Picture 1 (cartoon, rainbow over the protein chains, first blue to last red):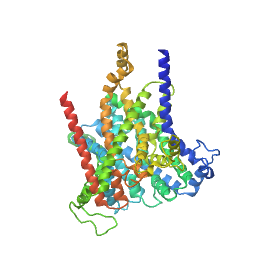
Picture 2: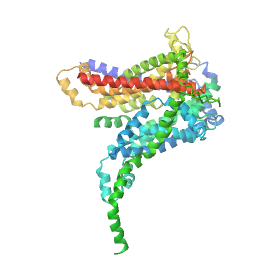
Picture 3: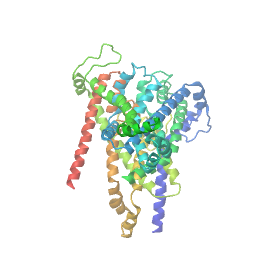
Picture 4: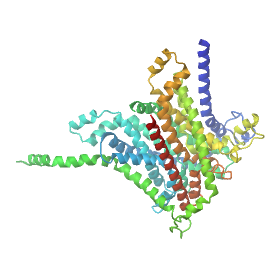
Length: 277
Length: 311
């Protein structure tokens, strides 16, 4: 009996280990090629770690390429999108959580529908609409589009956080003479700070990863976001693997930082939702 | 009567009406900014896109724009590449969802057991979920590339390949490239959702069952699966729609090639709009895709009704 349970424990740990290895190996390889000097890249093709590591590719990418500009553009777009979405979503999420009103059903239905239909349908019409407004090839245009795409999901997320806060709190404040908006701003919002952080993280990551609309809407190098810049780099200089992967590692950093911040909310947050039904 | 008192009296009369209006409009004011944005950036373009499907709209041709009726759809019915992309979409979606779900469920079951270092293991296996999709695509394209990637050499060493070649340029195998990348990227999503559902199952059920002498496999069949079933059904249905529209990995890794072997409908739409700048034809394909997705959702609803009425 004991031998069997020991065997099961070992098998369990090995399976976990296999998953961890599968999850990390591609990222490890990205890092490995990024630190391999060019003269070793082909001679030491599939060694797990080069005999000599160097940061020359990072140095080149940071100082002699347009990647710092792409990085800055992506940071501006994702950061602004995250902030604007979170503000709009906390307002609309609060409305869904605290009010009963006639349009509520339609609002929820509309927001659910936007999660269902293929966004690639909108590539052409959005380009046609934004182009005469001067919002193609502009970071502002991207922020507007990304904000709209992310508001529905963020609204549901914020609603679930508001639902977790007892109503008595703002009722007490309103008996003391505060308007509902003041109660919302000064009592409820501070209590949802973890939820706000999670929403910021989700939206930032989503905007940082978006590919199709930034490819379609941005054409010049000046306004290019990271995915656009990296892909055009790949198609132009497809032999500089070291530099491409160094750029890839840089693109990974902000997404991973945000992930580490929010990952402990992932399962707990969803569990709370599941328990409530 | 001094000013303050009169003011008070007035507001006492006025307040009910003002307050009623304010109360009634409050939820609309809170949700208005989000709603306006959704309508202008998603709903209006959607309607516009539907109208494009019946017009000749090419970005580089200033004389285009006329209504042409069903011409796009007639062209579509003759379009071999479109039908191939439909078949590819089925294959891409089916393989991705099935494998993501299977590996995601196993991972969730593994993580549901407490062990030392679970928090760190969980963070590491969920990490691919945070990797931007374009980077996941590039990363796997590089892994499959015999020049810098190890995979072809490993396949060769295992005798699976006669020489270290790139499967992304092999018409028979190319689709496996994006599918593998998609599995790597999507396992965490299923694992997170299923783990959350697993942790909501009352623990005493398992204890009661094992006192009654149920084995581990029996407990899984009679407790875990029935509890997970609704979550499984919903996530698979939603994920199927989402993955069938998910073109990022394909556009990054193969761009639909070689010879359209990895082109799915979503990437075909994007290629028509982005490369050929033929917005009319792209919108016509998009309309067909939308109709197919609606039919799929309707089928699900009917199936659900039928299952409910059987009980």
